[in-house]
Image 1 (tube, rainbow, N blue to C red):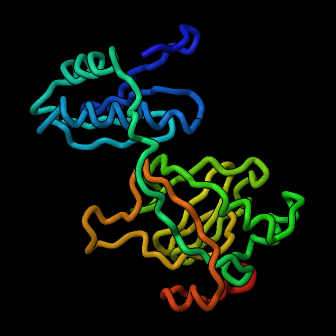
Image 2: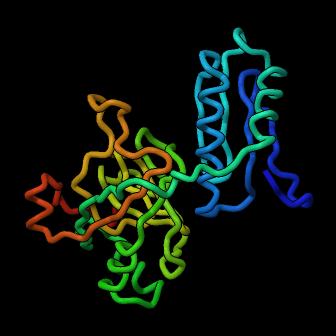
Length: 242
């Protein structure tokens, strides 16, 4: 795997007695994902029953192993071998695009109008811009089923809220920086809310629980209120000031 010497990547970093963090990149980029998926699959095959968990992210892969089956030194050498001839997964851009019907409206997306002012765009332009991209799922975290997706159009790059909300409704569609996401459960959150999707993102009765997985491609599809309600979407407006 070729990298410039100045970057000294990839790099294997300690993550405790039962884990190694493989740092493949320093910057977030959509092209990173093919490499991370390739390493994920190679680790699954190489570690076998000694593998406890794999946690991919924008630039890294956390490898958690069973120290009773594999020593940290053996795990380290295994990773070195896997990185030696790693090539990006050519199938990472293949597959269908998962569509999330979304009702964009200030009553459920209280930051929609403010984002439009910040971006110097109309609300309609913000909606069209957000819905125009097929986003990649780079990581799952924060809450079960919460998928960090990107990269958001630079025109919609807005900072997180100065003061996070104590309660963000389930299925709220949001943006922060150059990322977008939909909240799979009611949680605190500091992202900018644009609307709500009708799709259930986390279900304990579903295999794998989370609807989205790292590597998926996702598009938010604008729908009218009537269609949103017909799909089971919750139109309850957010409380003023929340």
